[in-house]
Structure formats: C-alpha cells, structure tokens
Length: 382
Image (cartoon, rainbow, N blue to C red; front, side, top):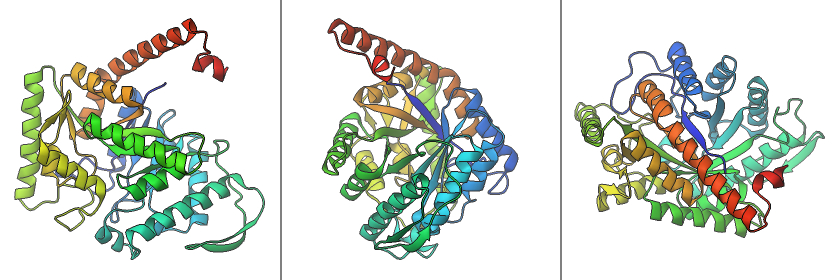
C-alpha cells in the first residue's frame, strides 16, 4: 500500500525547545515552512487548532493558493462554528486547493481548553456532538437538495449549500483519540484514524480496537491508520543520542524559566485526555522501546500531544517507521523540534529510504499474489 508523510504547518518558528522569534502568525515563515515540506517529499501538512492560536482555515487557504502540490490537513473543533457554516468553509478551501483538503475533527480532551471558547459539554457529550457534526458536514458536501436536520445538538431547516468540494464525492475525514469512546466515534465516522506514537505492541492493540469499532458500526471498510512521532536524527547513533539529550535539556530549561513548552498550554498539571495519560504511563514504565522509540520527550512535556521521539541515524529512524508500516500504518506523521531544519533533513534523509523500502515490500507482495494466481491491488484498481 502507498505510504504518506504528514508534517506540521506551524505559523511561527517556536517549539517546545525554542521561544518564537516574532508574532503568533508570521506569514513569511508559514510559507517558508510549507514550501520546505513541498520541496522535500512530504505529502501534506497539519494546520493545528488551539483556542488562542491563529485561525488555521485562512492560514491553510494562504498556503494552498501559493503551493501546487502540498496537501492540507485542517484541524477543526465542532464547538467553534455551526456545521452548516463549517461545511461551506471546508468546501471553499477544497476549491482553493484544487482538491487537496482533509479535515481533522477534534472532539477535545481537556475541559479547561474547551472552556476557553465556551464549550461546557462533558467529554461523552462532546463525542456525541462530534459524530453528529461529521454526519451533517458529510451530508452537506454531497447533497444538492435542501434538507432539514433535527438532532441532539443541531437543528436547522431547508438548508442547501451552493459550494461543493472539488474532491468527489468529498474530502476525507480524519479523527484521533485513544479512549474507547474515541475508537467508537472514529471507527464509525473516519476515513483516517490518528494515533500518537507508542510502542509497537500497544500500537497494534489500538489498531485492532479501531478495526473492531468500524466493524461494530457496520462498516465494510476500516479507517486508514496514521501514527505521529518526533524524530531526532543525526549522522551517527552517538550524535543522535547526544542531540536527544540536548533536546530534553532545552525543554526542561524552558519549563524551569516558567515558560509554557506546549503550543496549547492547558493550565493543568495532569492531562485529562487518554492519549496523554497513555504516553505518561509508557514513559514511566521505560525510556526506550523497540528499535528507536524514546519517551523522555513525552515525560518532559507532560504527555502533551505528539511527543514520543524516534532517535537515531536516518537509516535507524526509517527502519523504525517501517516497523509501524508493517503493522498497517500507511500515514506517518513527523515533526522535529527545529521545525524548518528538521523538516528539510527528514525529507532529504528519511523519507526516500522509507519510500524505497515500501516499494520493495509492495513489489514482493504483488509477486507472491501473482504466484498464487491472485489479482494484485493494482490490477483490481485497473
């Protein structure tokens, strides 16, 4: 199966290790970082969402209008706009990008962060709202006749949009989470299911949970799986581990100075969301797992978001990513701590290795199918 690479579309140069040098939205840096991804083999970039951060939709439109190939993953929280409005925004952005949009729906795992924008629902209520929201957006994208909706969270009458996505029948829907409620919602509604990087054994368990949820929802297919890491690479293993230790030192130094080291500080010491709790439990149980997974970066940030590292030479990190590919992961998300420099280095030195090895694996599988008299996936698509 094809493999894809997702990077980050940050709107400034700050990270957990370095304070930003300017404002929250640096237009020139945003374009420079996105162009670096497009020029170095990445498939798409994520425009993330935070309660006080620049609005990701116009930032994504800005990039889409200036780059030709790079695809966009737009994060969106259902609490911030009505689904009729959001569906038109997404369709317009898909038109601007000429069909390069995927939408990532965020239910919200932290009450404090959700409350910053007036969202007072419980977590279970938020999951129910997200599912209803996705269903409405999907229907708006694909329905050309006015319709009514009477749901638990949304009610409207005689609505039809006059703008539709460039992609037909619609853009993909992305979803993430590490709780049973998340598996149930994403397994039912998502085209892509997103996980944070965990040890191989635990990742395999999560993939099975997503598959089971999709089957329970009556789906004939299952979501594609995406897994996210923080790569720390260098020309030798020794240099990579020195760089890794410096990275954690820089995170700890920023914390000691009283700075927030996460892009979306929640104001709480102990995370509420299951994904962060899992990362902290894994870090407490051990620092190193499998071929290259390293947990002190997650521990240092309090399990904030995508925070487990893969450490080593480009060859080591590529082989570690291929281990996840062999589990069934076909979208690999990576974000370094020097956003621009690491995007270029990863694109130059890691992505080509992974793509070459995936092509070899696919060719071997096709040859095995042919020897058994089975049709290859390419032949079926043809």
